[in-house]
Length: 483
Image (cartoon, rainbow, N blue to C red; front, side, top):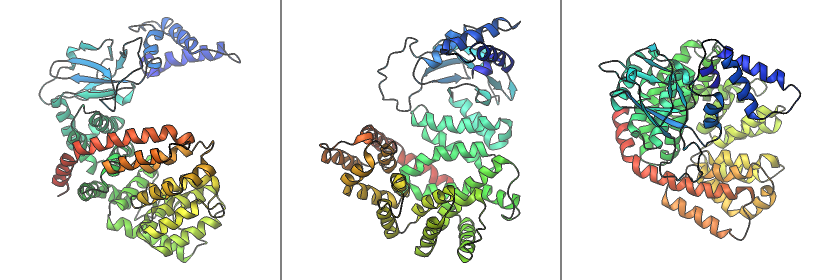
């Protein structure tokens, strides 16, 4: 962001001066601001609304970042502290009253406009007032560290543009619109269905960044709904959205015989196969099972491309049974590369067979089977599986004293065990179980998991509220869109 509003030549000049001046010496952050300010003052025609110090202190010395709301009917622009939980209380005061100096790069109707500075809570910028089919896009190329909200009419125009001509928007801004919409929905600033509508155009999207943004945002919906009546409609909708991307890569790779040339396409191929298989696309399941079967028939020759190994292993084991799992276990025990062993260890947690998962949980606490340093992450991997989550939760509670004694003292990864197991928790009963677990072990220390347990209780409470408020609307929208 700093480089963007200074321009790269000015930023490089100031940074170079700073590095040369303080080579082999200590500095404080204000030294960098001083040298950047000197670069600004030594550049003819360059001006800022405030000193670099004043601008950047508001970004570095106060908590969080703002959401900027642009009203294209009136031209008004407002900013406020963005809070994912709108009911959370900010107890830490800010000397700047949670107001930022916000550099806003923007475009109107596809044309880049002059950068605008929002220097107070509310302002009017009449060029942002539009009508008809004109649209405004804030934070072009995501050059600023803030979220953007719009009036309803401009949201509708942007959604229409995505559905009719999505390439009129920069690729990173397509990802930004999705990410902002879902986070604004979580914060109750926009409706949940508006966030979901940003994903409709993905039928036509082939670029990696928007897909990655969408899948990360939708992951919360999957976690909250994959044990509820909503999941059938969610799975049907996502299967419909991912199928064109899966077909695109089938053609691009000459029926899966080539590796995509572009680096981003290689990443997006992983997304396409992973999501298509998990959402039940039959062609994807057949593909991954056939690759894995070829490997099982000739263990010394693995036909699966390294890019796709994690995804294919998980998918094949998820749709297989004991034979596939036991083969993966043998390959894991014989693996000579740490990366391959890690992929297989993670993939074995993907099985949907409960007794295999229970056996794997027992293996996790046996150092002759799983290395001690990998025990907690293995349990987390199993808990990431919708079938494995309740098994892992019961297992950890039953063996808590042993797990804590063996793995909890001074382990940095131990806190993630609680957060990993409980991230799907979204019912009153699960909240009661969490509180009971806390009470039952109140006389024992939770070690590095103490804060994680408190956070898990807070997050579960928030998840319960979110599901209650959104489940009916999400189910209705997904049902309509998946038919």
